Length: 528
Image (cartoon, rainbow, N blue to C red; front, side, top):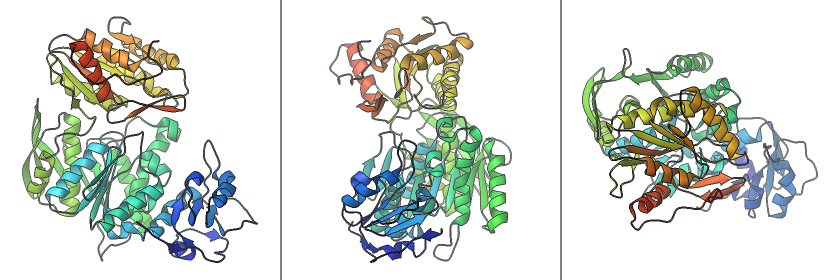
């Protein structure tokens, strides 16, 4: 995709104040936020950051061929045009959108946010819209689907950086797509990465304890999620009409909080955002009745004001019932998809990589890999697998370094309460001492009656933790590796080591069964 724009053209619809001149008004061939990736003709956006200030790399960007610079500081004497803005991080998403021809204006954009369930709900929506015959793309933390092309995004990716979001959206427009499902994280929202996506529908799954390391407090985290609905209010009409639908979880506390956010946005801007809610209790516009949880999935009747349709899904658990209801509500009430087609789309999603994914090498117990990495997700995962066995549940998991420390104790408490055996192990310790993280987790397990060496164990090496879990398993038990799911690396220090829980669990099972299988991936904790 070869694109060039005059520098001045990128500022024609720029919604914020800027200072400086366009100079010779060069042609811009890319919008870049990493000076090391600058190619001749690119525009470099210098952003202040936690570990490094992008303004320090302006000379390197110019040396690499940058044709223009955007930043926040007062700078004179550069050899290329310099535009000063109040917030470079917020500016970049609009400049990238302008560079790619404002692709959000040409798409119906459905944003999905929440603590847990974002990826599953995004994939369910993608399947529903595909079943309805719509030309739809998707960007999630697991994959990006653009026409017939699927891109893997499994290396600790949240919402992609702003230039990447706009690049993907532009590729979708070029491929003739009309709709996109965009998984939108709190981190991406707080860093303005998708501000210019121009959302038409905003879906929330839930809002629970997570990401205090990024946001500082739960209040800031909730406010970051709420930005999705504020952005929804700013979306202009597309093709002469406006959808502006908020899809909320009636069974969750965030329903009231987000309803107030939406009311305030409507009062301020007159946006007219409509609310469509879903749930199992009394009052939602779309509710589930006659729910049946089965070993091979779930069934229920989705009931709205003018429809009733039976939904059968191969996904398991109450949380996936909620996810599928969210997707159905967005499609039927937001886009007018026929309910039967929505049910058909839900039935076609057999699973998500690293979400309740079974690993079967012929062992006499069930083995599962799941992404559960928050207290709420771990609780849901254990409660779900309890219905898949009448024997014991064994779970191995960790808690990341340089991240929300409260979560460490909380996750261990959940495991002590709900699992029969918990194996506490590494999960991206980064530069924190792993032993200290495991100490905090062990305290949480003990606070709920856990007995070290009997009901919980500490094993720093994740591969050895999986091996121990298998050795402890009895026929008919269920073992589950949680926290990494689809991810394909684990961070120790500043190094990302190749690691996939699915490969690792297959390697441990092959060793356990004495059959051929993959080699256990290497981590620096091996042998300790």
